[in-house]
Amino acid sequence: MADQTDRQLFLVEHDLRGLSPWQLATVHRALGEAVRRENRQGRQIRYVQRIYAPDEQRCLCLFEAAGPDLVRSVNDIAQFPLARIMAVLSTVMDATTPVLGAGQAGLAGNTDRRSTEAW
Image (cartoon, rainbow, N blue to C red; front, side, top):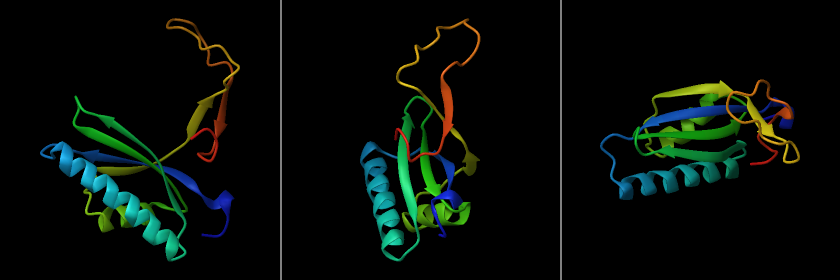
């Protein structure tokens, strides 16, 4: 990967139906190891965040990489089947800005940032 500005965020959706909690923990450890392995080989990818929705039996994993092929590769290495990969942007609330309640217009204080901040 050339430099920091070439990186994008990618959201990976996983369908977890049929996985036990033990299997889910195992596959996430394997995913982390796959990312470390790719980094040791000079391919820069970062596993930023995991969001688990147990009622939906879904997991969303956020990665930072130069492209979707590397994201797909680490999921393949970890043998973690994915439903889809999406390029995304992340918006992080400024900690000094009050959060607006439901029904209030606007998103004052939001800033569009890359994943290297506030993760």
